[in-house]
Length: 236
Image (cartoon, rainbow, N blue to C red; front, side, top):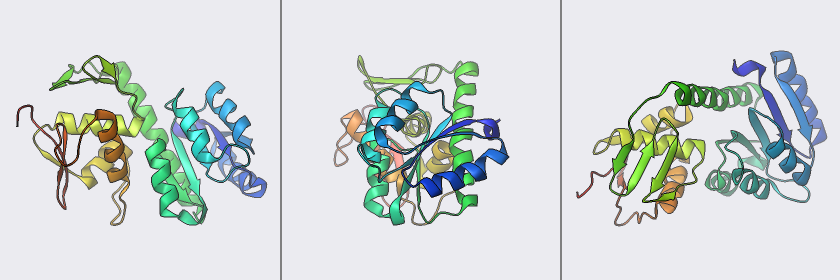
């Protein structure tokens, strides 16, 4: 049940954090609030939270620094809040490892929908880890073990966010076939595609860096112009 989860809000806006807590707790969520980056980082790493709502503008460590440090220790779903929804903030957050983002002009209904989506994906991932007995996928030097949710290039493990792993797995399962951005967003982010939503492109760009893949001469992830992406067959 995603509506009884423990949530951590890291935001120095005391009024907004209080409003979010007052909105979420009657829905069954258990909410902890921290107002600075340093304490928020420690709480996120040491606490057993189902998801983190993280503001970009924080005193001390900013949201990007907090996110980067969390990702060294945890794959907890992170929903970032960006002032005025500035595109550089959104892209930076996704590149560092955020699962989703919202401008601070969000409605509570939209926040709840995005939060439920990242929690639902996390729950499904846990169930897949328990139930999946899918064979390891091998594409060139790339190895993906769906049962363990691990991936490696040769003997080097890949450190991927949840959404990066899900994109990689979706492409690998359809090797040689094109996956549209809409399909990838539904497969990996568990939400509907929006016309101007380029978050998949940011996640794929991050994936390519981790794979050591050159987008101009890709070994693994190939761009299909105006459509989406395709995992190349070995030797093609």
